[in-house]
Length: 357
Image 1 (cartoon, helix red, strand yellow):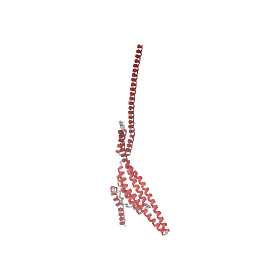
Image 2: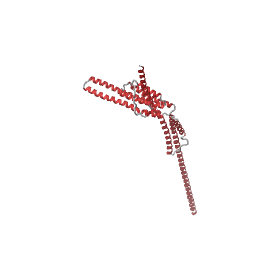
Image 3: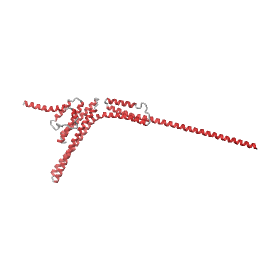
Image 4: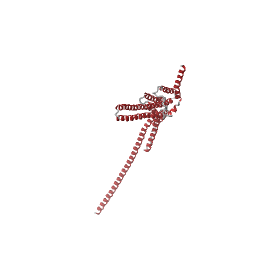
């Protein structure tokens, strides 16, 4: 009896720890590189030994000390959850109790990965590359998740078509009892389809919420880079417009912009992407005032030129008026001289007449 009990104990321990050790020793990277192919589902929540699967994952997670490794591990576990969901749908259907367990654990795996990324971010670490890698790895598996539900939907639709055909045959045979039984079965299939769609929608919505947290961290670095680049491009556009309009740029016009952008780049180098983006946007906003200042200066110069032209025109008109006045005065003098000469001639003529008398 003692020998029998010892044998059972050895078998149980072997059964418990050999798969666990094999799971622990398998490299994280090996799974992450093959995310497009789902792993073997192994034990599913429908199995009474499913606790071994959970124990194995907890054991492996405990002995993974690197936060990045822990995050990647959750995506590996998520791939297994999807494999479990696929098997359950194919073998047990949408009403299986284990389906809800697998779906709940899938969401928990993604939530854990997102939580690790957020924790590392709160410590001041650059998590953009990790977030992108995690997102890319899970995207491939997400397609398998969607496909599992599509396949099950097609299977239910095929059953629907089959039942409808049987109902037609039963009606032709006037088998009322068979018709009623088949209609009832058809209603159950339709209910399964509706439940399938509901579970898929709920799961996708829950996963999207967790994925958004990951993608948010992934996008922060890219957004900051984009904001800095756009600010620099906007600065060049302001300069180009000034050149096209022939306006000179005031000294120190870009002083505020240059200061803000330099600070943005400093924060970017320190991996403070949110702050870098904000300062880059402020720098770009400051260009509005630079553009306005250049425009005001250009308008002032235009007004100055217009005034100068007006003054020159006035001077010209004044000169012309003075010239006309002088000409008129000359003509008046000439006319007075002519009259004086005529008067003299008239006086001479009168004198000659007196002498003749």
